[in-house]
Structure formats: structure tokens, C-alpha cells
Amino acid sequence: MLKLTIFKTINAKIKSRIMKNLVVLFLLTVYSVAGFAQKADKIVGVWWNEEKTSKIEIEKEDGKYIGTIVYVIPENYENGEPPKDDENPDESLRDRSLVGLQILDGFEYDAKDEEWVDGEIYDPKSGKTYDCYAWMENNDLLKLKGFVGGVRWLGRSSEWYRTKM
Image (cartoon, rainbow, N blue to C red):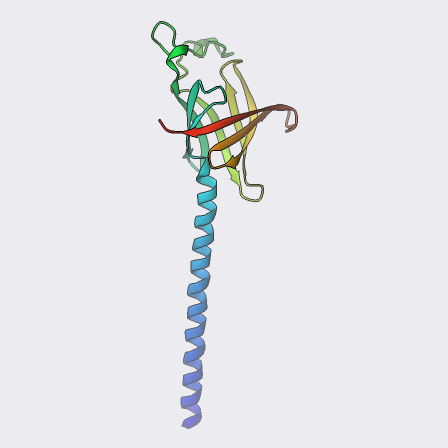
């Protein structure tokens, strides 16, 4: 009878320890996933383009990051209206406003390299779309590189600066 009581006590201690370990493992998993999401979402916000003529809002949509022009400086307005997408290769789109135009699409966060990859950037000045990736130099400086033909070093870089609406 004494042996059975000792066995039950030891068995209860083992179960208790296993449960504690499972709780700790669960909490660590939740914490690491939350940390990944925070790093990935650092790109979300409003950014000045390099020339500080437009503000672009980056947001997460369907698990990917997109960017839309939300502001153009009044000096670039024509007849009281924001500039048009007049260099677009599709003539039917040349009359649309740059404000509200999505210029970044499809970015996914690569935690290993700490950059956003597999995206595209549309350049309204030329009407061309390029493959693109981005990385944060610091919390207020976003660097982007548009490139062609899948060759990252064959392209042009741009710096965007965090701002507010």
C-alpha cells in the first residue's frame, strides 16, 4: 500500500512538471510569433517618397503589404487637381489621379533576411512597373530597390522617410 501511495505521488509530480513545461512552451511559441509579426509590420505607416513630393501609406492586405499614394504636395497640382497617371502604358488609365493610386503590391516579409520581398513598385513618372524589395535602415528610414529581369543589383534604389498624414 505504501509503494502504491509513493507511486501515485511521483506520478502526480511528473504530470505537474509536464503540464508546466507545456505551458512554458506554449507561451514561448506565442511570444516568438508575436515578435515576428511586429518586425514584419514595422513597414506599415505613412512615408514620404525620396523627393518629398508624395506620401505613400503602406498597409497589410490579405497577408501582403501594399502601398498607396495618399497625398501629393499642392505645388504639383494642375488646375487645382492632383497630377494624373499620364505616363501609364495603358491609355485608358492615363486620366486617373495619382492620389489613391496603388504603387506597391505583393510584398511579403522574409524574417531571415529582415526584408520585404517579392513585391512590385509602379513608377508613375515613367509608367513602368519593377520587381522590388525593401528593408528598414532604421524605424524611420525605408529603403526600396526596384529592379528588372530578376537581377537585384540591376536596378535603382530609393529612400522613404516615415511621416504622418
